[in-house]
Image (cartoon, rainbow, N blue to C red; front, side):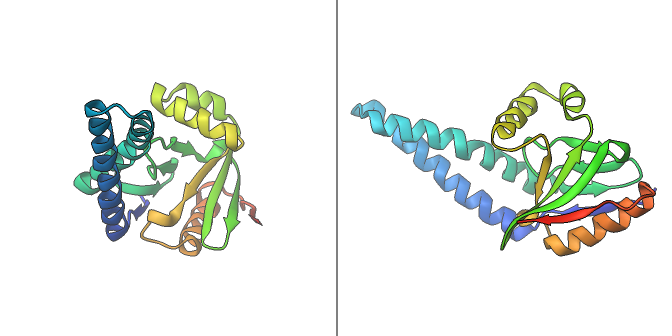
Length: 178
């Protein structure tokens, strides 16, 4: 079976692991400090910091320990493993359009799916919840940010283009949206 594997950039994951770990420790410190001498602002900062950085820390730690892949492209489709709440496998016949979104260095690949709601019903509850939260700010597309990938966005687009031509038997329209 012919497949393309895109891995995480180990150095970037290590940096994310350290930074999120420091922020988790700081958030827990603020929570403990607020129990000694009650201060409402410490409680709020501690809880919000823990809710934001603990999942990032856990995800970075699992990526580092399991040597997890970022993206797998094969004859089945594109399997997204780039985030804690990634959608998973997107079959070629479910993909409607692929776009490049963003400005300057903050660019991502947007994959529009034909039946996003049907795909989401097969996902675990926490992934559905996180995708619904992100759908409030975005549309029903899947966004893959290549900041933590071993490849640049331009290199990843070449790999995606080659595979969409091979497996979908049609050219996917790549539109750069700024």
